[in-house]
Length: 448
Image (tube, rainbow, N blue to C red; front, side, top):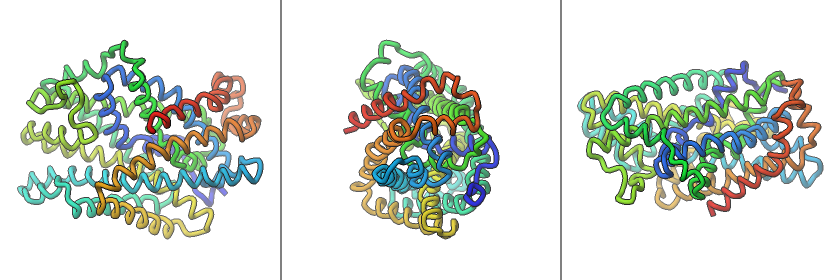
């Protein structure tokens, strides 16, 4: 069955694909904004701890479900169900994750379109097409529809190629590009006036703040959402992993890469804010709060790039290309969830399923663009604030309370004979059963 479904051809292929899914606009855009709003280095410290204490165990639960089931999210969950009630529950959880992934992609495509338009703007400015530059950076309905469509076409073209030739091949190309661009931009920003103050704010924690309730909840949420949990994505990717691979190690490696890139993003964005501040751009209000918030990337950074003169055009181009790549590595995983379900459950050819589902999601995106004020925030809330934590929590419940412990151990043993005697096996089963659902429930309750 694995051969007909497709599979990752190598360990590095899975790591790049899974890390690519996890590393998106949430890491490079959301994490630095959260950091700036929640005490700088104190938030980073708490985030790093919680990423491994909460996100990694839940991440392992979803990977295990997928590799055991060797199928889409619904079928994989139904394979570990014990009775008819469990199977119905499995359908709700699995299909809920698929719907969640599709809804996230519908607004994510709009955001990614903005990144693409801002990436093209330096080129039109360099060529003297000022009217085009103005259109590319304006919040117009036409621009949003055009670039959302372009981004969705890119995503569809990759997923149509399948697992090895599509997801794996392009993840191997895009992820090194992303990391390379990120490092180059960090080195450049480090040379600018004001950067040193930004690095100190980012790397020197105020320990007294690490136990503030709002900071803890924000860091918990960021660590949880950064690994694409609750969207059926990691269940699908888990189903494409060879039975010979050590899942414990693989999961830890992906988590480490995801956290590292979020940390690197902070090393770029936070010092950039202080550089912009040194150039006269207002970053913080009188109380020390972040002025731009979620619009930081589009409000502060273009101003920073403009202040650099002609070199700013190239830096701005590099930055928004970086953001576009990050968006694409995540979007391909979100489209794979619905596609794998339709291909396997309804026996429809992959190319046909990908095209129709991609067009369907774009139509939802277009509806959001046409009713932006009413629907954009609503789509984000339904999918990320409510949908993701609920689905991920229920996946932990499945592994902790429904799946037989011996079956879990046997699945882990296929890639690691000695796992039964490891520290992971002594802690992870009860941790996933009690701690993860409770912690995720706290995040969900706070979001209400």
